[in-house]
Amino acid sequence: CLDGSRKHREDPPMVSKVTKGGFVTDGSSDELTRLHEVFARYHVVHLPGFFETALVAEVVERVGKARFAPRRDEGIALESCMEDEALLSALFLLMNDPELLAWIQRVAGREPIGSFWGRVYRFEPGPEHHDSWHTDAARSRMVGLSVNLSRLAYEGGAFQIREGTSDPLREITNTGFGDALLFDIGPALSHRVTSVSGDASRTAFAGWFLREPSFLEMLAHRGSQHP
Image (cartoon, rainbow, N blue to C red; front, side):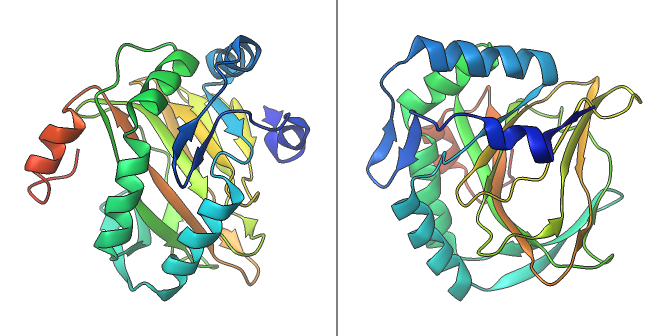
């Protein structure tokens, strides 16, 4: 197991990132090659500062005023989900930037991506909010993403990913403001987030890059069923 809680702090700053104006990148082949190699080896890669500071500060301010409601994924997890639909819509617009989808496709080495769909959720400290080992290999999910929106550094709440029933390939406690984790999805891969302890909660914007539908098709059917 690679100790991501220590190792990921050495990752160089990201050139490519999501800003209030959209996704920006200089197309650096060095960055893409490095990220793809880590992703291919460990099935997860840390993206420091993936949301620019101005963007994540504005999002977190809105999240702090939003209402959260319990959400149970039977047999897997219990969490609280944000109910600010206007903020979610703005985030979906940013995350479905065609240049960002193409960039994610190159990092993950996957076929064309159609869209992104996600949620803002929170784990409060203690055993009630929990996540079990599970695979997201359902419908057309290809790659997962989790962006840290926590105001304070939380304790616990580590992301783990494994192949089969082996020990975790990598464990990362993603506490950097606006930092992201990009992780692989497949029938042989499973992941979980460990329980949060201490006083600070863990809040994240998380979801999936999907093979289909396209973003326009998703908007047309939004509210019927999430991907």
